[in-house]
Length: 294
Length: 313
Image (cartoon, rainbow over all chains, first blue to last red; front, side, top):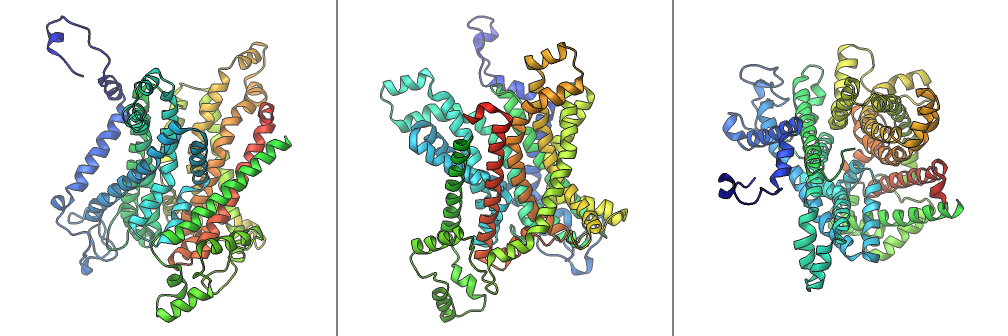
């Protein structure tokens, strides 16, 4: 909220509804706020991983393999003697970065195409929508695995695959948001005064499509974290000795019956992060207030 | 009705061609030479070149594509790099296991989501509703692999109620087949159930607020009869729509679940083929699954016509 000097003196115009209105509504949702706090805390902790842990993520002490939780190793060690907590802290960086990459890629792929489809209409819209539908019918994880099968394993390939798979979702949201404002008078006004299509897209369509896109970005982050977990669990994502939450989990499965702690810790972290991004998305949607929660 | 079905089939064909084009282009645009993958890890330049000619990978892309497409029409998915086995044979060998898993999971998903979804919608705003919604949100966030591993950990390893992994074909031993499928089906079913519950709750509570439902209640019909006879058919429409996505999700989930429980299905074959860089197999499985998903979607589209006569026009 912008508090101006005139408000303080009790004169002048009443404060208008600004963007702060949405933020206020967001603050009144305890679950969404808790989710945001969790995401921020996890991000900071993972960034500070080298300062927080004395152990490296990629080298273990072979004398200390498969230890249970202890004062030195709160979550125990893995099958080559690496500290599991350190692996999780460093791994969180990979997981988060991968999710950002995948989501960013689908935004870059989906949003311009969606706005163009809405703005151009006609056969351009029909073609782009068909392609999006074709990708959407495909099971996401399966398509990602197929793409990795063609391009070869590795985290970047995996995240490009995820980006391709979720691009159509952002395409749909951008297209719908674009169509919703396309008939507004100010678009007609912009056309009348001779704005170029590019200018209308960037200055008039995009800002109005921003809020629903933000919701979708948060939900896509959730699915990207899930996908990174699944792919690294299968061994198709992060390659050793790199760490990620999915990789820690996948690696600990063979010793699960004796050492369940790493599996549970990594699984709980992934689940909480996914849940947080979902709740965050729901929270943003509710604070925009334009769409009703279903 | 006939033109409706014909139009749907037309869209199906276009989508299928698009999927194939995208898959085919990916192979040739992305780094990584299929001939190198086919020739094996230790091949020298001459072998790679020979393999390239042998597989016809040196011909123009459009020729290769045409050949692949005409093959697909004859249900020829090409041959595996690994031993030259027809891709379709390998897939049909693995199909029963995957189908068993999908059907069992679907059953679990419906058994959980219908009572939970309808129940929370009818008792909207009560504490039971809140608990149901919370469970559904949790279920959506829980990764398949984590649910599966926790089930194995608790029910199989700690309590010893089930075998941790394995699969027996239905006709070899039906009882063992069902017994071994319980954990995988629970794993895959619960995550899908969570999503379905949310949709069923939303849809049923929307329909329950409509005038004709109030009329039905006003003329003295019992709650059960109103829901089953009047509300269910209309409430089913939006749910059936997401049902298609959920089937796709189930098929995707088999990749993970088959890996955890060592089920010799298509998902496991796909992961193995990815590791051995068996590109025709990977592409073939992809297109095969796409065909199944599209077919399911057409059936769902047709069911709209049955659920709502207005769509048929």
